Image 1: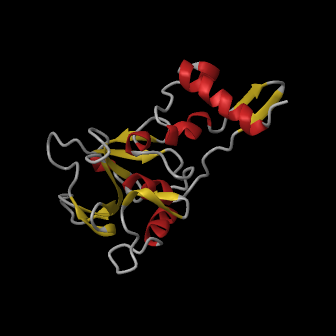
Image 2: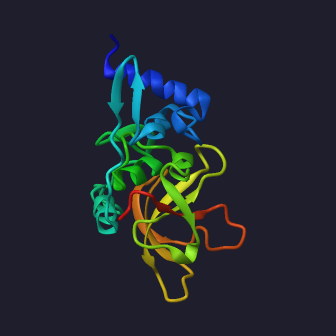
Length: 194
């Protein structure tokens, strides 16, 4: 008889291939997102039931506390890389955001973070600590995600955010992504945030 892990891999592949198999819709399109497509589901195959753990809940304060563990804007910050990992997470922007939200390692990519699997689109004016601002359009060299902390002023013309940026690494600085008309950046509320 096949092991539960082998069954899970096979069932995940079927779910991804069928798109709606096992009641799943909007199945992930990349290998790094596949585990998320079946989270919280009970799957049956070869006479065994396999339960896949749901993504744990996280508070807004925990998201920011976890963001600080990569030492933003210091000499101890984590260098940016789409290939390397730190604590099991990719050290790119989406890996960093995934780490702060306690998502499965190595973390979904930016498109995955913006998907209905992990988040819900909101208005920029609704942003709260721990929400995400994402540009999910383009390639892996142009897409980006930042973690919103707070507004920088009462007019909401800028905000403080944590990010993992190319050529620098973990950072904490004022940003205005998504605030100009026609911006590709949109606001998203993580589904596992309390």
